[in-house]
Image 1 (cartoon, one colour):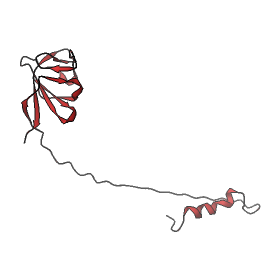
Image 2 (cartoon, one colour):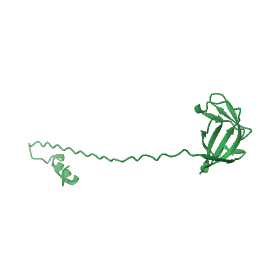
Image 3 (cartoon, one colour):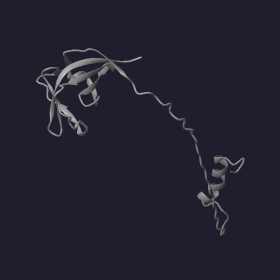
Image 4 (cartoon, one colour):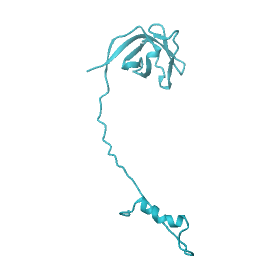
Length: 143
């Protein structure tokens, strides 16, 4: 804005007015406007289109410790995938006679102990329905 104008020179220009050192009877009016604007433009690159991840099922455990579960996601109308600590993933296959439940409003488990076991525990919909877990299948990315 003002080439060669530094903060020290601005301070020196204001010193007489700050300490009442201006000449006698001379009113000193000083006006200084400092404007700075910093604009940073960051280009946004489009994300590459990724194909949906396809999972390959393998023999799974009989039970899962509830402390291992990090999250859950629906995997169709008859399965729920559990994301586990450490990056593993397990699919809970539900009974074939399980009605189409409204899991989109949420679901919950009520295990008898600190484990969720196939052929014992059920997944309950917040809408009131429930489906028993038939088996667990371990998952790995296909391809």
